[in-house]
Image (cartoon, rainbow, N blue to C red; front, side):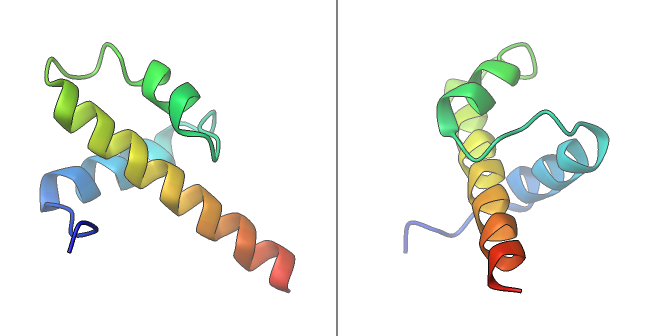
Amino acid sequence: MGRIKSKLVKRTSLSLLKEENSFTDKFEPNKELLKGLTDSKKVRNQIAGYITRKKKSEQNHKTAQ
């Protein structure tokens, strides 16, 4: 149940991934990149976590091929 993300988190994360390619598959660096984006710590962490999850799955698909 903990993996359900709101539309705001998904939409923002996907648009950031399209714009900027400096995100990694590690949570902490992604969180640091998002520091100035939002005042809410909870939303920032959710976006950073979702981006991390997407990058990890992207890497797994590349290595599986």
